[in-house]
Amino acid sequence: MDDKQIIALLNERKEEGLSELKQKYNRLILKVLRGILDSSQDVEECADDVLLDVWDRIPPDDPNDLAAYVCKIARRRSIDKFRYNTAECRNKELITELDECIPSGISVEEQDYGELSKLLSKWLNSLDKCSRRLFTLRYFFGDTVKNSAKECGISQTAASSTLMRLRQKLKIFLTERGYFND
Picture (spheres, rainbow, N blue to C red):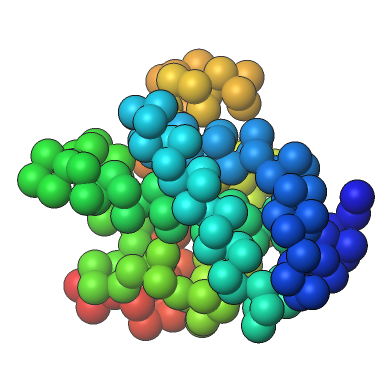
């Protein structure tokens, strides 16, 4: 079943839409969740919450890209669960890296289609395919540097260096647009 049919079923409040959504996107949802959460129990719980969130949001939401919409909800759910579980002992490496390139005080997870989201999309689209994939795997899916490097067919050292340069470029890009006041 295609995405428009699934959205139509969800708009009609038919549970078949939820079943079709789960069948089509459950693997993708689990991948996003596993990138941030360690516990399989948390992953399964959040996967159910993601489906419920989609059910609650459609309608009134009418996403153009259902896969991206579902990923965004899954990512938001997993980050919320991660923060809840680790209150004082966050994944300092990932959080520190994100703090280098995303201005403090701005919650990317809470931006729906705001200016920062548009700027991030524009910046990502300006990158070559390998850099975009590496950055997305690491910072959107929360994958490790090692796994991200493997997915992109480069060494872990090369991936670390590339990610550092990309964070610096993103910070410059956002600074030029008024998001940092260094």
